[in-house]
Image 1 (spheres, rainbow, N blue to C red):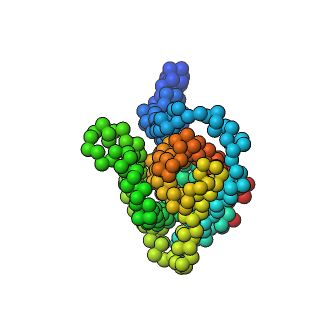
Image 2 (image 1 turned 45 degrees about the vertical axis):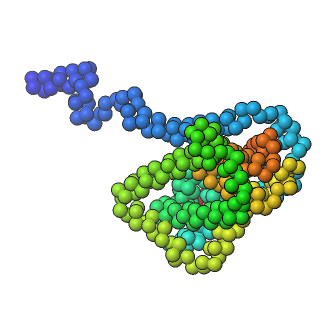
Image 3 (image 1 turned 180 degrees about the vertical axis):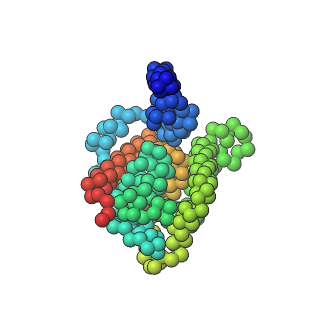
Length: 367
């Protein structure tokens, strides 16, 4: 009895003193430290940088380009100076380009044994472009997540098909750049001569606008390369995932209808071009520019968006403005064109992203 009384006193003492070991023995867990861990802070800081750095980079370039711009004039043109019939036609081709990309994507998924619904693929594309406005390049990952959640396609396999798509698009970009360079070689030579590219002076080099375009593009490519290396190093840790990604990449070799795949690719890039080129007819100062001029600006803008800023904001403006001035458009008009066209097209991306998200949520998962 005495031993039992001593044991009871010991237990009571542990309860009063809050003995953690005694509490653990009775199934009680000690209270968690409310302070955030160092790992959590680092993760939070990395996520903050992913959003903040592209915004700061794009904002800095936009400030530099538009530091002396008359925004009141832009507002007046937006209300009364745009031909909205041509803009609507341009936006139609912007929407249709996403449809073509979705149909082409399905062709790369079919050899893997998956045939997602066309509406889900289109919604995933809409959402991918919208999410890239927040964190550049994350849209490619998000659309794979959409297919995994709503259509049951393994994430790693769909990611492999996205890598394949991007390789094809890179070849298309290089082909367009080569054709444009051949067709408009005198224009590029004039550009290099006017910007002082051939002058070996360091001062002239640093004051050349083309130097900054090239610099920002190089930075963007390096950032993209680092991201890809990190993604690959992550996937190398899990052999099964790597094999799934590789199956997705190699799905291009097993596409059942190659002519249809090529047709979707051509139509998609044609829609991209018309989405941009038709905006020339929205303004009096640009409606006289020809197809070749549009091709030059389209290629320049396409390469400029390699720089990781939201929807290419900043680098795209700079590239398009610079190229428009080569064709005799004034700096003020070129700046106005880039600001309004990019703003309206970005608004389209946001609207389509919201539509895709709502359609996915209301439609529910497959089966």
